[in-house]
Image 1 (tube, one colour):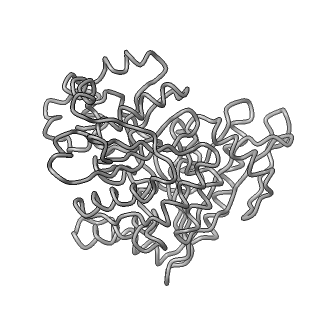
Image 2: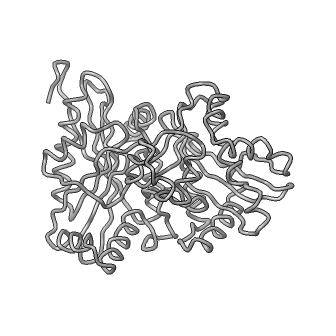
Image 3: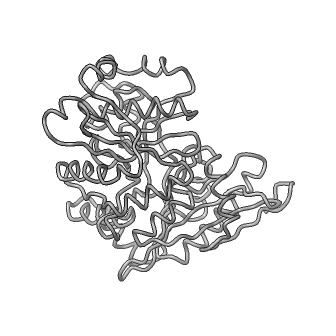
Length: 393
């Protein structure tokens, strides 16, 4: 496929050379919508949950112009399924149309060889979603990536960001030091602390906690390229909460949060201070946006139009995120190609309205996100919504 400047070629490989992976990572980190879920480092993280990578890579005149990291896993009885979160990524420029077609064709061919392939295109890639739908994919609700989120614009002054925060939030942030709250950057030595705080939150909110082993792999792999930051909030010198963020393509995203559950810590509002510190850090280090890591998609329109019943619609986590200002947005339509008749029938049945159906669908989502069925307690790292004091997507 050509665009007048040369043919766009596509390769599909499980083990690209280090040079090719370096080029791919640069494209991910430099392309709008890029996310750590498409970095080669994330393939190493997901290997801990039993996934193996396949790279669909498009080049023109030797230069990378697009592609996708596909993560695959064999499921008992159903066969091998794959997913793409925040991808495929296509670089802007004259080769974009040809690259969308080339990568879309390769993903379609790959998907037909799998029991199922689930794709959540990245922010701003509606053309990619439309192209895949035209190739036989169908709309998906599998939830392999967030369907919506809230993003704070950091391109202006930090004072403007603070001015856009709800007044009660500003008062809490400004009074943090008086209440004995300080926030520092965390490091690898803080991972046992982070695992403990996540475990406290998991016990309270009844989700599966991350293991320390998994956290170490995640942190080390992403830290090599400067794609992870941790912020620890302390109350009178004692660690009380932590927020773990990932950074890619000019956006810092809140991913995980853990907090001690005693009454004093809850009253102190320590997580809010850690989130604000993360936002200020992102601004100081050249990030253009802060993303809160997920929002229920059915809240986007009511928030935008200021619906009369908005207060009744909002969950606690959504209300918390909105207190920082920011704009809600939708990701492009997620799509899926399910070649296995057995998987398609089971999956379609699971999307029904009965409680048993919903439980099966939730279990399938946990498997696809690497939850309880994965090795080493891999997290639901890219869910469509998150708890204020739990895993953030």
